[in-house]
Image 1 (cartoon, helix red, strand yellow):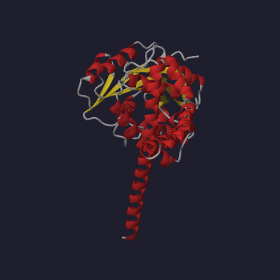
Image 2: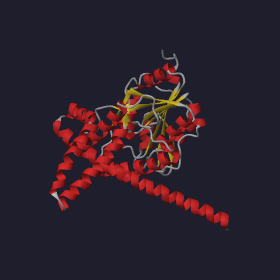
Image 3: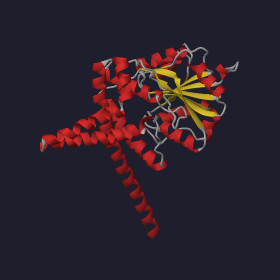
Image 4: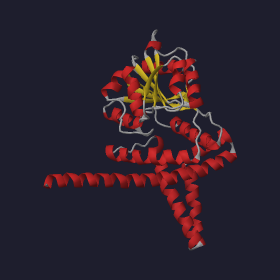
Length: 344
């Protein structure tokens, strides 16, 4: 059962930088929540399009930062003035459902030992172009098949008890771009023995429009590189979300496929016979995802999505290797500096 004053328990915190129409849709959805949260705190993160004023018009408490910072800094600023028992972080480009607040508190009441929870994107993204549909459907599918005992936190739609958030020191403010600050918080929560729950039924609509450049930039520089360092730093390679065994095997197979294709073109067509079983292996490892694409958007979409998914494995593997090299180079420099200080 939901507590009688549950609307007083939640503080919604939204960081925004030039949110545009998506931010207005976000606030309109928040305005329709039933019941309403205790407060809505918007942190205008160096915006230049008047997003802070839009938030004011919707009755939100607004904190203005003069220059754009990392979203972790902005979220921490909002958390400092929040009064609710629970902090509910959402991105400025998502639409919540009318019953989202009730769902969040119901889950916390059902699982009293829970420290935090995360939701999922729904399967009907706001942007209609192919890459936006592909990207968001992939995110939705990944969350829907993952373990409910989550190993990470997600600030796009994630709630956490305020006292625990404060005890953990909030988000890591070293990330100055939208990056993996929420994943890093999730790792610290798990290492401290706290429980995080993935609530698959708690879904929000993502409004962001993706294109090829934004996908590659985000996945390589804001995901693969820092995430690799985080994995190596904490020695955590969980078989969950994007790190499942079949994903790792698919990365290996895609590099074999590319290598053998180049060899067959440049040297010998006889190598082509090896390509077929590798291709079959890739399809078999990801068959449930590709069936999902087909069931949602049909054959043509599925074929295009498979090709993009293989490209994703290709540049994700490259990102991991670059991240590994950067991590080793950074720690070698650190080690050399310490040795020099000791010898001087």
